[in-house]
Each structure stands twice: as structure tokens, then as C-alpha cells.
Image (cartoon, rainbow, N blue to C red; front, side):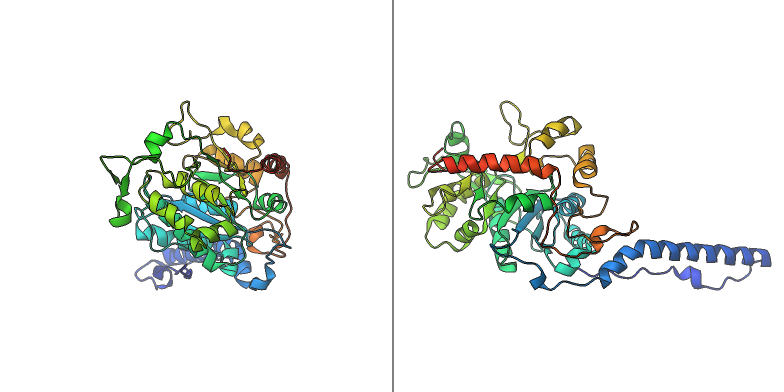
Length: 422
């Protein structure tokens, strides 16, 4: 639950009578006090206009957000971070916020409870639309989400299950972490995805395992985060297991965009495939790089609904390491020209993020990215503290690059009789 904000308290000393002062000092003190209080009132009036307009703005009913096949698509965002990532997660949320979407924020178990409370409070105070639409939630009972092991996959499946229950109108489930950032606005993303079949999932995948077969597929591990609180390590068995024969093993990027229909299949499962594979991947070393990939490509109902891309811009070492390189201003031009909607990874406070905010997203500090839904016109208020029709979008120039990339990906998908053949 996101706590409500409390009213500021005026310092008690301002209301006390002063004794033992000369007349001149009393007069000076009264003058300074009056000036101080006046300044406070002026500042409160200016800074409070945005908040006041948000609190008194019309709170749209759920029916005002039109969902379904005949309307614009919507996304369910699962945004994760760890200890010390409150500001990064909030900034990422502001960069991808839209009233049509649903958001679930998860700080891992290594973050103290105070950080989860702080994140919830910051969301409540910073995003007026989130208060009105009620579309942002923070996970209270955090999971371990260890780098290696199944606790991260367990947390993702739990988040997907929660988002399916919380909201019956979104179309795609999208995972992000605190080190990622968007390269387009939500209006751009929604506009381009409005021309995408809603049964498609975007999963970077391959069955060509190479060196990963010995190092990622066959080792057996036990994730301590599943069984012990606040543990981020794992235990590896002395023996390995054979590569499975009952299903074809696929691997790829852990970052996915999954259709609602496929995610429903993973959670509810009208056959045993998702549960059978989950038993295997519980003891896999990096299951988030393989579980969804293997389920979708071994399912007769979904194996032809995969677009082989995670829609992320990343730069890797050669040979590739465990994680991509950190991006900076030297990567800006290539990153923006790539046409992909997201990029990773960025260090906290990296200056290129400010450049993306300034030149691409048009986002100011502690504010959401302006979109067609924002209706505030006064220069002194956040334009997204007021809103009108949330069922329209205004794509910007960057959407053209993403649309061209999407068309190439869809053409490639259409040309393959089996999109999981590789």
C-alpha cells in the first residue's frame, strides 16, 4: 500500500512570544519573521499549484481507459532493483509512465524495508496520475532475486501472476531493471505496437548452445535465496546432468516482452509443459536466460509467435562477459539511431541519461515524460499533473526509427514457417 503524504509542520518557534529583547531587536525579529513566513507562503503557493491541481483534478473512472483489441495496446511493466536503487527505479518509472499501463516495482530482499517504504512514498508524491489511476504497486514481501539461480525467475513469475490478477486489460508483459532506460516515449511505444499482432512475444533465443551447454545447461545448483532469507549465493553440485532429451533447450537474453496469452499459459498452464520445465529450471544456473525461451519454443500453440529480439540496445565485450558494457555519451548516436526502444546498462547518474531526457524524452527532473494524455498548460506546473484523453497518442520523430525496425522484425517473422527453428 502506498502511504498518503502528510502536511508540512510549521516550526513551533515561529509561534512563540519572544521575551527579554530590546525594542529594536523585537521589531527586527518581527520583520524577519513576517518576511520568512511570507516567503514560505509564496514558495508553498508556487510549488503547491501542481500538487493542488493534481489532487483536485478529475479522477478518471476505470472505464475512461479503453482497452481491448479495438483500442490502443497497454503494457504491464515489471521493474526491478536492489539495495540503493530507489532513485534509479523512480527515474525509470517516470521515464516509462503512462496511465494506460500497469506497473509493479520490486526492490530485492537485500534492500531494507525502509527503502521499499521510501519508494512507495516517492511514487505517491511525485506522480499525480499514479494516485488517480492507481496503476503503480510496490512489492512488499521482496524476493531474493539472486544473480544466479531460480529466485529471480520465481520473482518474475510471481510478478506476472500478480499483474494478471491486478489488471485484465494489458497486452504485453515487459521486464526492466534499474540499469535500463527507454530511448522512446510511451506514446511512441504504444503507437508502434498498435500495429503488432497481440499474440506475438519478443524473445531473443537460439538452440545453438555452443559453450553454454557445458557451462549453463548441465551444471546443477541450489539457489540459497529460495530457501534462506537474505542469501544471495548458491550451492553447486559436484556432478552435472545430461542435456535434456524430452524438450529442446533454448537460451538467449533474460529481458523479454511477452504476450498476455503466453504468460497466461505459463501461469495457468492448460498442459504440463510450463510446470515440467519449471522443475528442470529450478536447479539451472541462469534460468531467466532459458525458461521462457524453452517453454515458448516447445509449445505447439506458441512456437510460431516468437519474434527473435529483446528490443534492447547493448554493447558486449569480445568474447562476451556475463553482462554488457556500461553505456555513456560516446554510445549516444549509435544507440539512438538503432531504433530500439530500450538500452542497458547505465551507471547511476550517468550523464547520457540526462541527454536522453533532454533531447529524446523531453522529460524534466522528477516529472513523467509528457505525452498526449498530459493537459497541463501553465508553465509553473507539471504538464502531466493534469490529464485529458488517455486513449490517444502523439508519436514523435524517434517512433519512425522504431517503426522501421519493427517492420523488419515482423517481415523476418512472417518469412519463417517456424520462428523457433534456430
